Image (cartoon, rainbow, N blue to C red; front, side):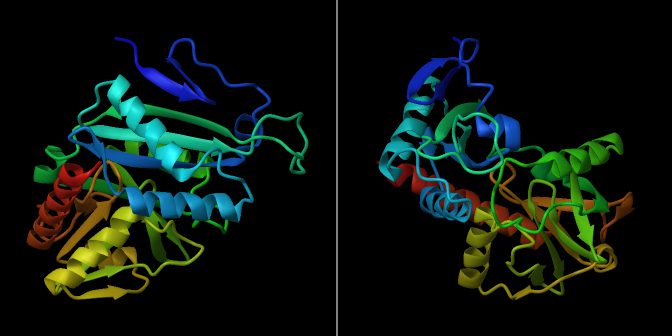
Length: 286
């Protein structure tokens, strides 16, 4: 069966779905996006995703294309039409369709597109082996807290990581790790989780937010501060989090092993607890 996608009010096979060449997302990257995990056929982390999407839209003065309830209904309908059990829904809102002009168009309706992808989230084999990361200079703009579709710098960094045989990249600015190319970054020293504090220089990760809640509930010490690559290499553990990775151990950076080069105990515990939370939310979903 062909994958069904959503484009501005219509569900259509991916082969026939179209968006105007004058959409400002295509011309300017003038839009925002979200990736929401799907477990047992249900959206999870729904409330935090809606909150962050609202913040991103507000920061760019883009109006909601529909109500939040309708937005969720569209995503759940895509899950149903594609019989998706596990994976994610990608959705993107742009300022809309207008002749090319840098200034915002007047009275233009925002565009909404969305699609599903299958992915093994819960039993990812990388959870057993851990991942390698490489470092690159962070060349992004200064409003990284907005989840915009402007991702060229991240594409360059991710390709650099892939060229070096790594799964993910960590971006570095002024000697400190900002975040992963498509993830949040953490190290663990003497059973304490260390991660960069929120600011306009990093994305407010939903998995980051939830993992902090889990750590606090479990009595795991956490410190929000900047850290260097050298600190990471000397750490007991390191890991990343994102919608599609949940929490994955980082076992090497730029080819150098962290500790014994294997996933650590605390990372494994956090991943297990997060998965339990996701499954519970899926069971209780409408």
